[in-house]
Length: 174
Image (cartoon, rainbow, N blue to C red; front, side, top):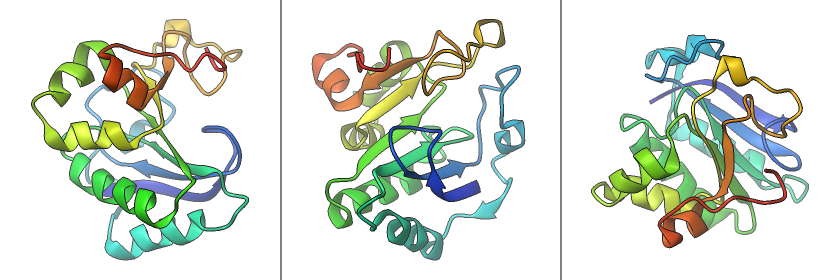
């Protein structure tokens, strides 16, 4: 996996001060995407053990609320193994930090059915606290919705959604 950006301090992509990792590679190609250069899987730098360690170190201070994964597409099958390694380490080594993930995939129509067949995806969804799902739609761009680019996107409680077998909205944001 490659990554296009690593931000040790980010306040735009989730609640509180966060660490954000922008992975490379996305096949959604949403018109108006804020990060089209990251559509290419080879864009940016290789994601290495050293980069993973930097992310973990950035998460350790008490004032950091958690990790946000963006893209590109963190949940693309090619990115899942590296993303899973990171989130499992965050769970083990940084207890109390939350994990947000932005995905262009629709939870109910794409991720939930696939998670029944793909153990890596299921483990990822189990480890993510908040999932922002849905493709960015330029015609529905809305600067008045929190933590989203277009108003078709939803902010979900990920584990709760997985266990319920349907999307469970994080009401405070939707």
